[in-house]
Each structure stands twice: as structure tokens, then as C-alpha cells.
Length: 440
Image 1 (cartoon, one colour):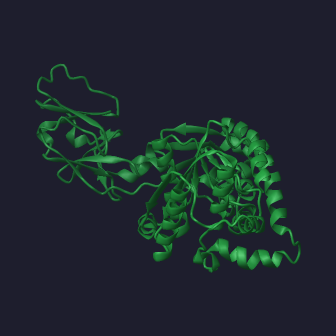
Image 2: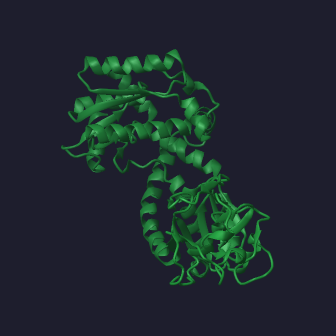
């Protein structure tokens, strides 16, 4: 095992002699065997342990075990305790996802502070097989069946070549002490269900099914590298940016034979599952306004583009503007000027500038996001128009409509900010005092 460990690191260029490696050590058999292998190989290492507080005294026991082992072997040990349940509830995550986010964020923090160049995680070959089956069950793209990467940025997995049985044999023959995690025996987690229920059944078909799945994942990982080159070519043709939004050219997508595959891979990172691919493809020929949503993003059809935008919590707060206010920074950035001498005032055609008659305004003014049912009299008109209809008429993209703000005088809209002032508040021959709003 020791020679295979060193050879695997060399063959995959996981480290260099100059690397300082932070080992993620839980106290379980996998991480303790990895720690032993690193110690015997002479690498520059330190240990990080995360106590997730999920198993009460057992979790605290794991932390004390890792700290004591490091003390006895002269290894620097970093540790932290999390309230994982609270973090999961606040961020609406599963416990496993919450623990993963907390763990990797902590590793990143430690690396920056202490200048560690690599982080070693003790995933093994069986973990790869289980990950592939988990992803297949929930639906996935090609990356999902390519298993766990041997190296991803500064994260390395030097034990991923070894099966769980090989790790157990090494621990036994080298008297490696470790802690048993009681939660590993329960099947309430997806991974444990596959480990204890599904894979044992598959072994009736192939006793080496774990390695067979892992080998297939490795082949697919090589295929991913080739596919990525093609995806990069399609991205250059299809994708453009507009502020924080991503635009997919409908015309270019219709010309791509691999449009469906491309969209599955590209949108997966934004929460769109492969099972949603048909709905996404249907958007290409749908009328403007149709949409498909993930938990975090919305994909809109808007004439020539599919527009990907993140979901924002609608802000119903109001900002007050007094007569002395010179500027505001949020929710929109406005410069505010009072023009005493209006003889040289030039009427601006720029929709980002509003010139309003001070005498017609009721202070304090208010800024808020527009509401359904809001109406105003657009400049140059004599009758009311709903803002919803106005935004349709001037062809404001659907995804931008939720970010339109209005300036109110009393209960009346004086300016649809960035688009049109209300005709009632325009300057005229009787105007003696002008207030100028500039959207910056």
C-alpha cells in the first residue's frame, strides 16, 4: 500500500516537494490510514479536524482523539467546532451539504492563513462508485458519472485508488488506530443506503462492481476533458453577458446539434437538473415570457435570447428623500441637484435623467420597487397607463422588470426611474425651481 500510495501521487502529479499539505482528518479509518501513509512518506503535513457537533459526545471524542494523535506524533493540528444543524436550517441545506460547505470553507481559511498549498481528502475507490450511483439516481450530466476528481484545484485525493477492504487490511496490519462513526451504519442517508443496500446486491452480478464502476468513471473523466474543449467552442458562439445575467443566443443554439447536451452541462451548476432539459429545449421555440426555474435561478425566453438570471428577494422597503438629500446609493444610485436658475436648463432626453418641477412635489419623496397595479401618466400623454403595460410597450426584458424602481410624490409616481417621468411633474413655463435626478 505504501508504494502504491507514493506511485499514485507521482503518476497523477498531486504534489511537489515544495508543497505543504493540509490533511482533512476526521478520525475515521480512511483519514487515519491516509495520515499514516503521509507520515511514512516524509511529506510536509499538518492536520485539520472539523467537529460538526452531530453526534454529541461521540463527535467531541473524535476531536480529542485526533488532537492527541497529532500531539504524540508532533503534527500541527487545527480544529474547529460547528453548529451544523443551525447552519443547515439558516441556509435551507441538508445536513450533509451543510457539513461539506463548512468543511471546505474552513480548509480554505486555514490554507490562506498558514500558507498550505494542498488539501488532502481521504476519499477511496468505493466512495467514487457510490457517488456515481447517487448521481445516476437523481439524474446527472456526464460530469456526474465521471466520479470524484483525483485533483480539483488545490484539493487532492491520494487514497482514491484503494478500496475500503484494502484500507481496512492496511489498518489492521499496521495497527492504525481510528474511531468508528456510528452514523455510518444507518441507512437514512443516501450514500449509506447505496453502500449497505444497493452495492451488496450488485455484487451478485459482479463481485468487483465497485472497481468496475470506478474504472468506468475514470474513463469518463478522460472523455470529459475532450468534451470540455467542444463545450468551450459552443460557449464562445452561444453565450454573452449583460451585467449579472447570462444570455444564450436562440439562433446559435438551434444550429448546434449538441444543444441539449450543452444546456444540461451548462445549467447544471445553476440548479437545473438533467430531467429539466426537455423544458429548457422547449423554450427555444416558445413565445417570449416563458420560463423554467431552478431553486436559485430563472431561465427566461425573451425574443432572441434565453436569459439566465439569479432569483432576488423582492425588496418592499421604501427610501425617503428629503429636500436636503444630495444623493442615495441604494436601492438605486441617484445624484440629486436643485437648480435655482432655470434659464439655462436644457431638457434632457436621457431616460436616466429626470427634471421635475419642485413646486409640484410633496416631500419627503419615496423610492420603492414598482407594484402590480401601479399607474402613472407618461410624459407627453394625458391619460393613465399601468406600469406593467408601459414596460411591455417599451420592451423591457421580462427578467429586468422585477428590478424597476419608482419615485413617488405622496401617492403619485413622479418618475419610473431610468425610463420615463410622469407628465404631471414636468417643468413648464411657470416653473421657477427644478430638481434634477441623475441615475448613475
